[in-house]
Image (cartoon, rainbow, N blue to C red):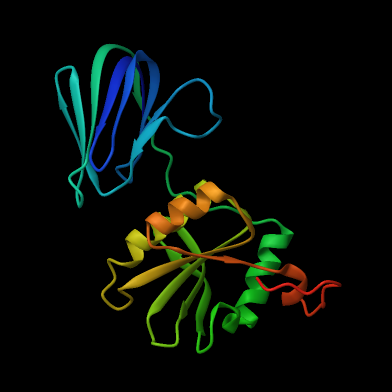
Length: 220
């Protein structure tokens, strides 16, 4: 991972345009090729970013990040670089889920038709180069489906599933692979992002999966 702290302006050029005026910012360039721009607030959320596949070209004070599929660009104009360092993080062991998420994964694998009639399980914890996909299965038409499970579904979970899908779709034995984002609660922003990326959202009823009938049955 490369960390650059610089006084810079940022312009996004694509389906939408956005401008960040000149200010000190943190630029993260990850091994997967992604580039994200951060301020000293907003917790983990970047001000702007470009997901892989993309390529960074440094031409003096102008850095251009171009997406390999859409051609959209992130243009950084560097006024001053305050820090520039690279660090090898190695292979990440992946997120260790809490008890509820782990149990949700187990229950959904046992009752995979919760996702739809005709679904069949390929396996749980399907390993990729960047970590395990919670559930890999097939739908009624035999198409491959990757499922990411969270207790609370937020934007970072959609981003995680997006990275898995990009890798899985490079495998001709699995492609095309579509995604399902499943959680007990899914935030509105996460639903919007998932829809934009062609990912289905499913709200899981933990008690129903455990076979406990709720006092007031609801359709989910």
